[in-house]
Length: 73
Image (cartoon, rainbow, N blue to C red; front, side, top):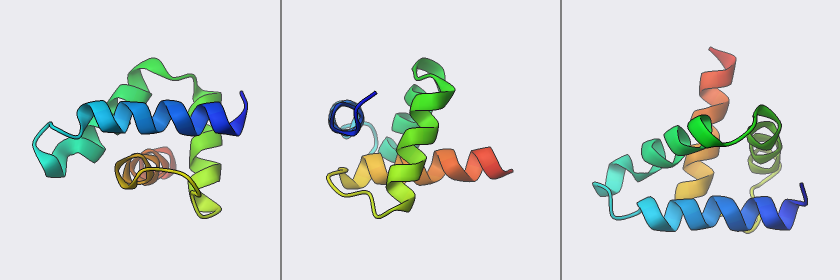
């Protein structure tokens, strides 16, 4: 999947879940990605976030970091 599309999708999910309890938006976004994204999509997002996360919404970036922490543990 092209990086631009992945970023757009991540940002759309983050935007839609932003209203959920503010602080929980990152967790909700990560949970959505865990449930509906393929492992490859999640890995690509984590790699992009690790490289600086250019273009990612703050919530999408937090979700990527949460996904990365989950993958390591």
